[in-house]
Image (tube, rainbow, N blue to C red; front, side, top):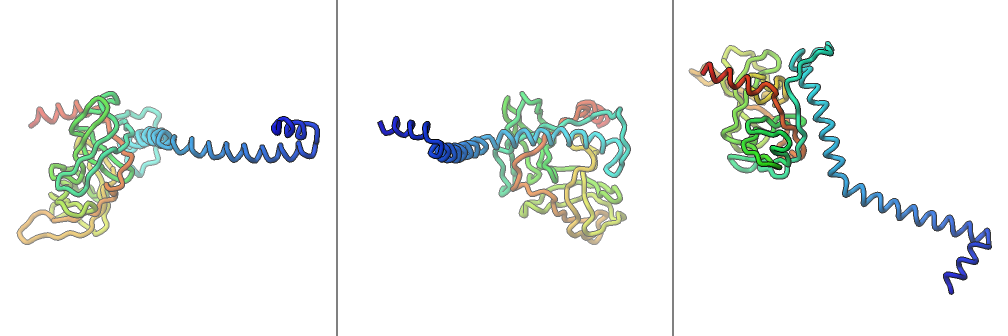
Length: 254
C-alpha cells in the first residue's frame, strides 16, 4: 500500500515527480558508475594485453625500419623487407635472486613460439626461450650464467660478449673488447645483430667503468643494464623469419 500510494503521489504531483526523477537519476548514475568501475577493473588485464599486442606490432615495424636503414635514418621505403615479428607476452613467473634465473611466459607453441627465440622488454633484453609447451614457454634470463649476448658499443661499433657474473641484477660484464677500442664511461651498449636471436640496436645499457689489466689484450668492462628484470611484466618474443637460414649457413662453416 505504501508503494502504491507513493506511486500515486509521484505520478499526479509535478513537484514530487521532479524530486523523484532527480533523486532516482542521481542514484542510478551512482550505481552505474560503481558498476562500470568494477567492470573496468576486471577487464584491465584484457585491455593491457590488447595494448601490449598493438605495441608489438608497432615495434615490429620499427625493427624492420631500423635493421635496414639504422636507428638515425629518416628514409622511408614502401618495399621494406620484414625480417622480424614480435609476439606480446605476459610474464607469469620470474626470478632474479639465483645464480641461474628463469622466467615463464603465457605464450607457447600455439602462438608460434619456439626454442631459441629472443625475448626483450621495453628498455632492454629479458633472455632466451629454452622450453616450450602448447600454452606456455620458459627461458633463461639475462641473469643466468649460460646467457651470452653479442653486443656492441653504439658509438664506434666495437663488439664483445655480455654476461652476468652474479650478484647485482642491475650490473653485467662485457668481455672481448680489444685494448685499442676507444671507451668512454657512459657509452651506450646495444645488441650487435651478429646472432639470429636479436636484431641490431636493441638497448642493453651503458659502460659503468672499465680497466685494462696488465698483460691483457682485452678490457674488463662493467655495464649498468638499462632494464630492470625485477619489473618485467609484459615482454616481446622475437621471431626472426630468417633465423633457420642463418643458423644453417653458420653451421656449415663451423
